[in-house]
Image (cartoon, rainbow, N blue to C red; front, side, top):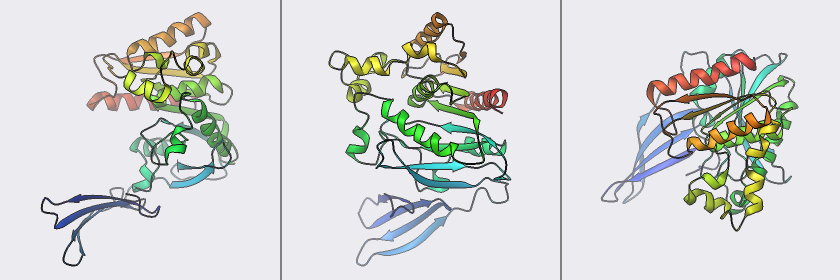
Length: 314
């Protein structure tokens, strides 16, 4: 539950209904757990307050703000992680981390605005990280989410480019060194942005990307796209196969060979289209891995993603 934009509460009621466990987080509070006696008069007792896990470490600055969506009226929330020892007089390579799809969001009022540890790692290496929740993502109401209905990726790209426009207005962002990375729907968005705006994004890493929605699971695909028979224009417009010819920057596509969610057929079809078009993406697989890497494979994956930006964006 959002607390007036300042933080999040997660409540759990006891079996007899007499006690409530309230776990709370906000950008400067990693976790605070209170026990609330419900009756006869509500009383709150602090049970546990987590210490700052980054205490004593050299950490970046985590910031949050809003920009207008491509419709000119809707507020979109963004998170930024700045490099360690940030100097506003310098120009920094910048990576846009994107998911962008329905039923998920990346920016909230929790610890460090929901920032992932990989962002801190990249900031320590001298990158600006930028994350924007475009229209179509969750928890913003029906109109906000349905803006993308039957045309996945289209309005989302417009909103992400509003974020890029904001980045390009900042004196410390190097306009010639902007990259993009995402997984699953974010992989779809990464390739969409790389091929629709080839002169903006120099480097991209797309993990487990959807390439054509007609090959995706019916439960999800038809919920947001309708069927290929009832929405042929939408499926044609959102397919990335015709966009293979427009790839210009360095793109790495990564999959797990046992992915049951976004089948390897998706990425392989894009590679085949790139071969036919004469474009040159890079490709890496994790043998036997599913949609998301686990354990040591996850460590290896994030090292690989980071190294790709180190090699081609920095």
